[in-house]
Length: 118
Image (cartoon, rainbow, N blue to C red):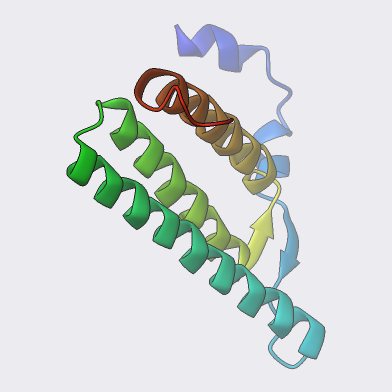
């Protein structure tokens, strides 16, 4: 199945996806600041994941809460990667994770917290 999908891809697609747009250079204060901000942002996403799982355990929400937690953890992990290097593949990966995060949020709020505002 996947062979047919990948057969139509240009031969330079995968090498292009591995292309690095940015790599941390600790001698550059701006690059170091960008790296540190991404690490702080990753901690923020991990903290939200912890809060969501704590809320789930306290209020016994449904299985969608686990997907919501995983989406936050994966989004935080992409920030950990971004703090060191930004390959081309990271950009569409972050967009896909963000879309998944928004879908999970919509489902969780609609199903388990209908009184809450989106």
